[in-house]
Image (cartoon, rainbow, N blue to C red; front, side, top):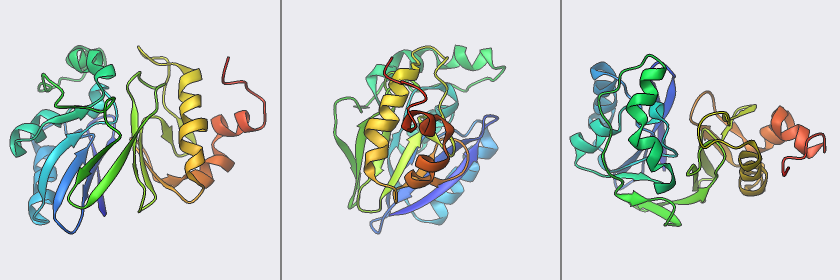
Length: 223
């Protein structure tokens, strides 16, 4: 599996393009916010001869949705998103306006409900879908088991975690997701987050203050 990261829009969302030897590809968190950014994404796809088969979103916040309509329309594909985040999809444009950002529209429907599947595939590659509520109710992370690569969206960042003060957010749940769903995958699993730089689970177990304070029994995340 090959991975490209392109950072888009004023909130600097990491959009990931994944493909394998078949040249089938998926776009995770398509976040391009204007024509220039869409052209950058399209040029990369064209230059590598890729066939996009699906737009996949880790969650439904507007900054991760800004380029999804373009991808769906340009490549004739549908959106994979947990239906638990449908309320965020429906309110994405108004949420963007609260941050002074204008969106060019969002998909009106979810083609594949990620709360109802265990994995998604493209070419010869499988991504395990792991529910990680907390940042949003329907947040998922996507795990390429053979490559030991995890796309964490806004659940886990390098030395930080996602916000839990937005509608549908919950600190207890995001820490349950991190401690019970992500950390057991193993120290050598590489993390590709929705914002910022790459990391790995081993680094986060040692240097992420939100994780360390729980592991040191300084915070009871279950209450």
